Image 1 (cartoon, rainbow, N blue to C red):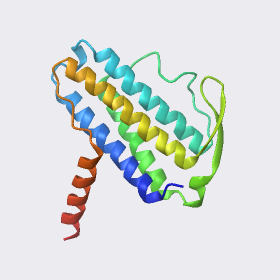
Image 2 (cartoon, rainbow, N blue to C red):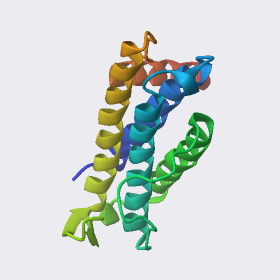
Image 3 (cartoon, rainbow, N blue to C red):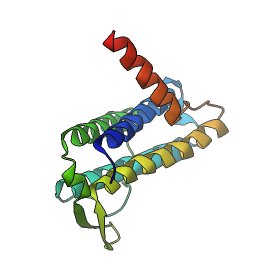
Length: 170
């Protein structure tokens, strides 16, 4: 079973990676009009929707999605606002979850209707890995449009986090 500390690191990394990517997107003056904007927003919105679906599974609530994306796509800024809220929810969830509940199995249905079961810790691992995968997809699209993506590397997150906490504690 994964420890709460590892999950804290993972959801922190996810939020940090999202912040770097959206900072890059929003700092480009014409991001809404580049060739691949529609694919970029669709990919990131998909990751966001999956985060919401698994948030519902973790809380035992019903989500509103019949698929893993939405028909209407938000603006980059609106999507960033939404992603920040969801990232913070995952951080708060991991901060409040008990170690024993991480090994609880949760039964749920995928949007396809297929039944599944996962540990709570596996669900969190899934949303982190899923987001990382799609940030990588978007990084390739940015490069194809002449925009350098943020360096989304877990070792950078870990070393920066450790440096920041070192200075804070002094």
